[in-house]
Length: 108
Length: 116
Image (cartoon, chains in turn purple, brown):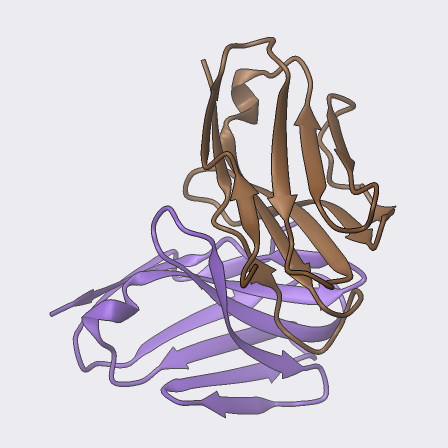
């Protein structure tokens, strides 16, 4: 498969809790991006981290990158019901491949 | 337009029928990608255009799949003799820069193809 792996496949948390999703990829990258997808919709770009960066923040989002382990994590702090969606990492190098996704459910 | 537009939004095809899916990228965007997303899966790369040049078509699953972008703007993904396994959402994305640009990509809402 082209895709990297993400875990967990599904995550259910209470509103206000933090959500952490992990992603592993297969090839060397220029950058790694995280996308969100609501059911039946296209993907929305959330955040990009360059291969020479280790951590990046944007609002309630925090992304880390470990190129030696070919892995990344996305942390959503103080989750809201509106954060319910699927989240995908995308590794961009010689290829542009998505992970398998994490389905996040935030319970009000 | 302000975003990437895909049409039709939904398509039902009988097995063996040919279909054509259209993508209107954001005006001026150099790069255009097509992805196939099966239910509950992540998007799978199909092909990439830089302007009118198809630089990577390694993800096209068979020779029944063909994509073009003749004038470097609108792109069409054509599937000949559709099979049930072609049922999926087909996503198009565009970006201002070339492959590997340090920026996000804008996706359309996709075309949901159902082959019956």
